[in-house]
Length: 93
Image 1 (cartoon, helix red, strand yellow):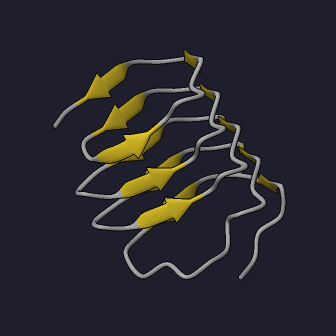
Image 2 (cartoon, rainbow, N blue to C red):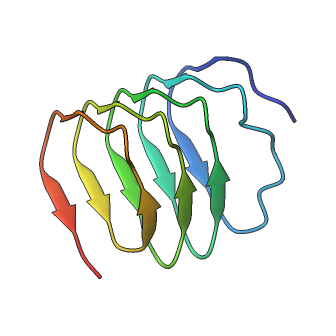
């Protein structure tokens, strides 16, 4: 399935997810990436809720600028453009 520019609500990515998120620019709710999953979303600019990356998941979102809620990272994420986090920031390795 291919998604448009805005995902209204929450998005959960698990290992084996084959959907195309390449055009997504905004997620209005939470974004969770779990258990060896990989999300390639080079156009993603904002997540309205929390962003949770866990269990060796990988996020490729080079244009992500803001997270409205908490940001929890316990794996591989490269967030070069990130400018703001609305909640708590928690980074583990």
